[in-house]
Image (cartoon, rainbow over all chains, first blue to last red):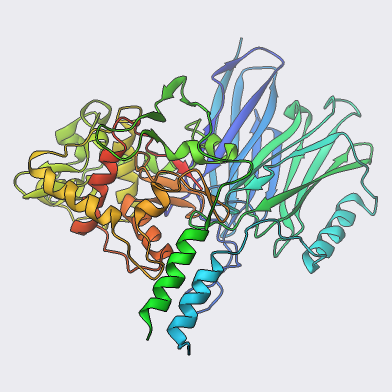
Length: 108
Length: 151
Length: 284
């Protein structure tokens, strides 16, 4: 797919203090810079190199990504939620593009 | 009987499929040395202790393109009992770097899952750096199979 | 050149590459549960067929590979399914229509489509595969350009349409006008070809459950296509898999969309009658 498309899975609601699991996946070729084209020329590296998750503006989790991460990077992690709010997810591409998405959660 | 080129090719092809796929022992490579250097940079020269951190990988990966890995570190994730980061390295890849996870109090737990590429059978290492400066590591060997047709 | 020598090498190879795995022999007993629903991954083989019991390829995979298919979020094929849904609703072509213009909600109208393909088409005078049916719709009704067999958009659409049949039993017509196509497929299935002089049956009928080098041989059913293969790092069509198999035995593959591959697709589907559609499946 030409365009990187993020997908995230966050529970719609949680109890205060609950630790929830967040799953994220972004469609991306993750060109490692190790492969050669038919002419024998190295295909330049182009990967997602950073992923960040924030909750109501505070950092929850961050990941530095190297070319050894598989195509369509999948990252799963946890978050402790104490109040209702919004998770913001950011992926940074080698070419400078930034892909974002967000998800709300309600604390009961 | 004299074999011409085609026959030799045919026989070699036949013979090639006999080769038993199995464990390829990973020699100490430049990548492994690189990995050791990376660990020292990450830990500030400290030798990681064992314990606290658990790395989960398949024992045998059906394909090296997409190998699921999970890591978790025992920690209260509050006050001084905090995991700052966990670095994942692959000793036998062209470049040992895989990913580094950074945790916060809001993480609740120091655990993460991702999918990685493995060029061949090798050790995968996870190193955890705690807030108090202590470091822990866990290593798992993943056998990457060279398939008959599926690989 | 001496063809006997070549044949001998081929036969020897064919006879010796299969070894019963010590740890793994035959399919496992795992259950394929997706969204709390169990999918049929084994049942009695079709009446009159060569297999007493049939098993989905899922049952031959390592548990880590199996796990990718258990959750639609973790299934790496789903970004393509999302794209398929988007394309379904996108107006394209001179007629100013989208798929949805005529077929409305795919979850209603496309139910069962994958399970019954390839399907006889009177106007065409031959069976339609899902790919040729989509392209017929595109060129005739949408007045849009046909997609290439393996194009990302085609794979996205076939996965999206295929998903609407997930869990339904594979059930293709093999009588009437389809009879000769099924017969042709059967003939191809049992024909030895290529430098290794092997037929589909040598691996997938005679030796399923055994290891071919490090690979656990399945019965070669096609109930999960398009399938996300870890080897491909993406989705591929049934005909791409056929092509790969033929290359593995050092034969010259037929073309995607050829009558040979359509016939083989039909025959393979009929061998897997009753298995649940798993589209989009995940394999190694």
